[in-house]
Structure formats: C-alpha cells, structure tokens
Length: 309
Image 1: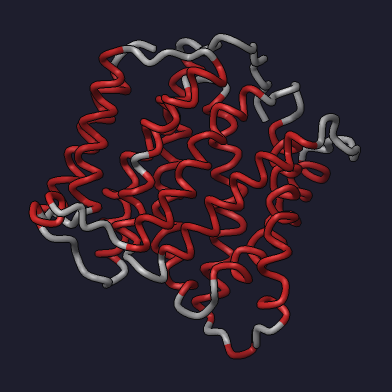
Image 2: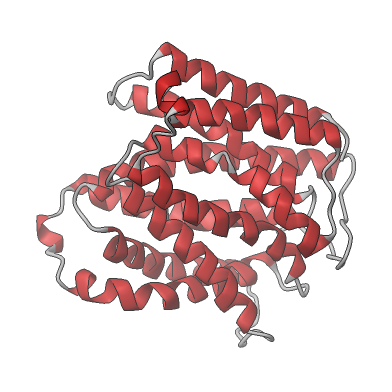
C-alpha cells in the first residue's frame, strides 16, 4: 500500500507528476469496476430485494476488508478514534447502495449509470464548503458538457421526454443516493486522520453495515439460499470483493491525489462502459442517440482531465 498523503483542512492538497497520473489511472479502473456493479447488480436484483441483498453484500465485504487490513497489511486491531466519522460515512454509502439497487427494480443499468454521472457537479458543490476547493471555469465547463450528455442518456435520447421532464421512478430514487455519494468523496479527505487506507475502508464498511442491519436482516434470514441461481452468488461476490473493497481503495487512493471534482469526473465514463458491458452480456445494445449521449460525457471528461487543477 502506498503511503497516504496528508490531508489539510480548509484547502486542497494535490499530488503532482507521477502520483497525479496514478490517481487518474486509479479512477479509470474505478469507472470500469463501477460499470460492472450496475450490470451484475441488475442480475442479482431480479432475485432479491435491495435491503437483504445489500446487507449480505456488506457482511461479506467486512470479511474481505478485515483480511486486507488486519491480515495482508497487518494493521493493528484497535477501535478507531472519532468513530462517528465512520458511522456518518457509512450511512452515506448505505443510502447510495440501497437506492442504487432499489432503482434497478424500476429502470435499466444504463439509466442508473447515467444518473451516477451527475455526481461530479454535486461533488463540486460540496467540495467548496467541506474543503474550500473551488472549481476552475474550464473544469466546470467540462462538468456541464458531460452532465448534458448524462441527461440525454437518462431521458433515453427522447427530446419530448426532456421537455416534459419525464424522469422515471428509478432515476429519482437513485438520485438521492448520488447526492449522498457526492458528499462522501470530499468528506473522505476532511475526515482523514492518517489511518491506513485499508483500515479506514474497513471501518467505513462496518459503519455502512450497521445502517443496513435494521432494514435488511429480516429479509436476509428469510432468503432460501439453495434456491438462488449461481449468477446471484457470482454477482454478490463481485459486488462484495471487487466493487466494494476494490473501488473503495481506488477512490481513497485517488482522493488523496486529485481534487474531489476530478475524482468523480471519471464517473462520466460509467455509461459508456455499462453500454459496452450490457451489449457483451447479450442484454442488447443502446440506441444511437443514447450512444451519442455517452460519447458527449466522455468528451466532457477528457476536457476536464486535461485542464490544470
């Protein structure tokens, strides 16, 4: 594990050179893994309700993060100081995860992925009061361009739907979670006290699980696991190991090297990766207008990434 960069309150601390490049590469991989969570999560959501599914996922994730933190990286086992930080961060992640899977019961992985791409604009708004980070005009322009492409995908390339503001139930549900995740990213740096990233991630996972127990425990105990298809086990394993643990570490790593706005800017690639993955999985390819919207989001990301912090 690379050495954590110190966080400073009130203003941003950015890496330079190779460390900044590593941050960008981490978020590129993050976008790929997140895209997989929407597609594979959609498979699991067909057989289980969101609450027990998320609780099952996070119980497994606690084991994965504990093995990483206290086994592989040999972090001393101790209760964290200011434990309320992890309860708050875990609550935001729990809301995000629950709303994502609740939304998948009403809408497609592509549509939820498009809503996810609205997060950078929200994160830029939160970064100012939380960290004192101001978004440069050029970066803001990139965010707006990419957000416009995301809106086009959300409305399925239908101008009439945009004019009538025909937003689906699933998109509205997931937007609540996206707001929570947008606040979560700058709070990672704000609440950093120098703990190893894997230990930080473990306690966030514990915090999220505590929030998920009340709504999910009854449904989880009632699940007939012998009746679930293998695809559900594969999807939950992916979500618990790859998405939850892997993307947390990538997000934590990049958040200490890049501004919050640019970190989540890589979410703009999510619809494009979801479209590709959904097509490869045989779930059908998106229409040309929707593909055009995904391309616009990618162009907005390119503009934002190339501009200075």
